Image (tube, rainbow, N blue to C red; front, side, top):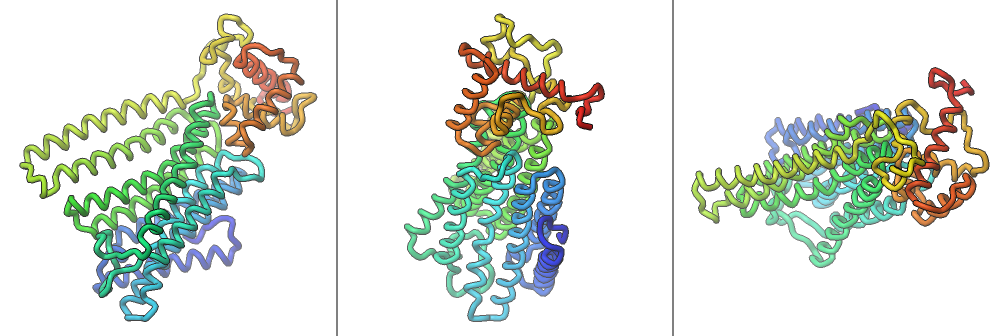
Length: 463
């Protein structure tokens, strides 16, 4: 946990030491007989593993040149460590009967919210270039900060408070209930912004751009799935009659697992050259996680004591739901994974061939050349007459990105992308006609230029 990237050496040691002390303290409290899910070894070690995974991802993201994503992964690591530190502080304050115990519990009770935003920001930043952040990032940060503050100020443990609370709703009370409800709704909606925009950009793109953005979108989807799991725990408590502390430990494990999944997706997307196998694993993992939530939630309701169904009826209904939902998720995620995976035609067609000019699915797939390192000219060379920004737009276009995909990666508006493309078409002498044909021809010009700037072994002439 001490290998936290992007922090000064002293800061890394301090953060790692604080996390290690918190883990040791929580396990010591457990051995001393202090129960509650905050000291459960499974939850504690899961959060520690999540923080370690985020630290490793931060180092590797910085190593591939994506410092922004590396910095956000560092903050994610720090947020998970802060959860452990605040938990240890809260247990100690409650055990000691300190007057400020309520403050400690309130701070700890809100510590699970920042990691959700940070895992989304890390996955999203992995595909970005340039110094600007997309508008979704500050909106998400502001909304998450507001929800965290509102949760800390408005939600308190019930009296008398004899131990750290669980997910059982009777253990909590919320002041100004309408304000708390609005803040929660705001946070949930904010967590949908990044995945929705990324999935839209991915599904509108082609080639390697579609795969990279799709992997980032899957990583960003882990946060709302974690929130759904949190809501499922409430269903498991009532009407499911599941032990609240068990559900709470499961939530900590889910939070840590989602963090590791998001940072892994960020690392895959940042490296580029996403393989079909990686796309399939990421997409299927995301879809099946969502399907599992549906099955568990439905099964919990079916098995609730209040329904008074027999064991055979419960088993049959749960099995039926599992087959339908699980099978549908497997088939659907398989189709989505294939749609996101770059295709490699054995006999690429001439983009000016009239038979294929109107059909984007049969147009020249630039991915075949991208895999040879020809996606961008080496040595900083650019197509004659284009501005540096236009060259960036054309390079991303050559990867197969749609206007939304270009806007997502370069952090500009789609209107700006459209203006750049019109200028590019004019400067390259591409006459108006079929829009798809012009895009393919422009991409081909860029790839041919890239090939001309490389030697016979794929090295640039500058090398």
